Image (cartoon, rainbow over all chains, first blue to last red; front, top):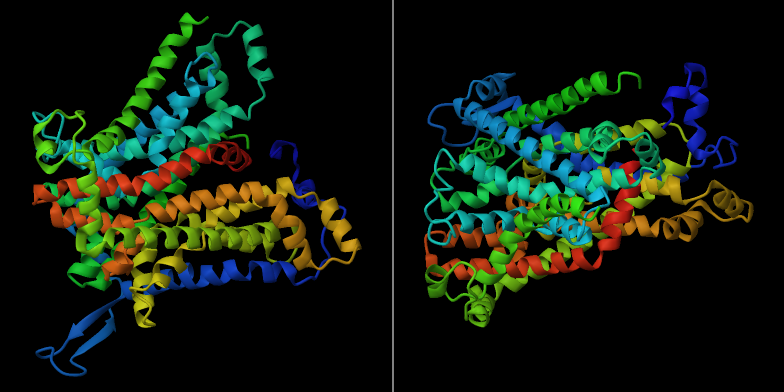
Length: 314
Length: 276
């Protein structure tokens, strides 16, 4: 988008540009687009808006037991305001989960995105042999379900089947890195591909110009390619933050193999336990909203910081 | 010039070795009998592959193959419906001007940012209320709407369908429905293959939703089935070879799809990822 060229007066006209401003693109007043969008909007209402609303509703309620809790009417659902949130925020287990999540997320994001960027730049540098093989191999884990990835690495970590039986990959001090390794293994290829395809779309003439000016390949990578990649890096980072906060299948799959992973290891595992093991739906709902809120704040906060820094002119 | 390419090539091959290492371990481990798994060298090929496979087939009356069929139904049916909904929505958002267009687009796309967990638990509760929890529908229906696919479909529609073609169709008296099915969808087809593939893999790999929705293991997909196998077998090393063989079999269809559809993973992802 050439947003820099636009003044506020022409913005309205420019926004019409993509559908053709001749006005003949589609008859105005036709109901067709509304009909075409009905399935998506209906699915959105039923499976997104309604569940979110229901979660908010549940998060404000709690069961009150009167007397012995026997018989009809002894258990009543009542509004309790923000009590569940207060309990969720002051819950030590959840905070421990958040701290683990923060450490885990920092390791995963920096290593995964760093490797993805490195591999994408190397693939694009044109002097690499076997590039096709490497690209396909590094992207391959994308096709591996998180459960299967955790199973494979789990057995590689397990002393009885590990190729390095001397190393305890599942000790309290190492399990976080072992878990991060699974996420890095699974996510690097996809992010590499997004960055690589962005690089491929850049006209080669841009690099030729830099080369004629005497820039080395490294200088081209740092001064030309990385700035062009910035929006794609931001996008992959935001998606990675959301995915990292929601880590569930990996620790859940590893849990049977080791006692060091508790049933509340990640925030999502705690929500699952509250909802289905201890049966406290109201706490689970409040915690869900807190988790969603934190992931939204982190994603938008990251976007804002980066926008102000890197795209100040946009 | 060739000499300078050695270091980058080596780094990339190291990356490839890292990603291929656990998969190749899985392939080798699946050939080992329970005894060999704990006694032979890590990458020594064993003799138990056929026994492992027949043991896996016999496990609880062949429930593993039922999980495989279920996974194909969930991923195939869900991805197909998802692609159709995304394509039709993307076309409408790209090629029509109407009141509320940007509002609908922004609200639908906002769904990308909603964490699955906020949805899965209440979705289960709501399905339970209408008696549909623990059914195929409870896993299939919530995975049809995929905001990112709608975004991609809109990008493809914008890039692939010239307005002049739609205008010509209208002058010839074609209905809007006919324009959709006769012109728009065929022209968007290559991009829609990509949308289908991504959604197929996402549903195939999903664990949280079926794990929460389903109780009857006759309806499990492979991910949940393998998890229950592991949860049951973690303390019984005699079951390890079954779990390992199951994990390998669960991988094969996706890896095959992945390798044969390389063209669609690459080029069309560029179309969607670049034009942001």
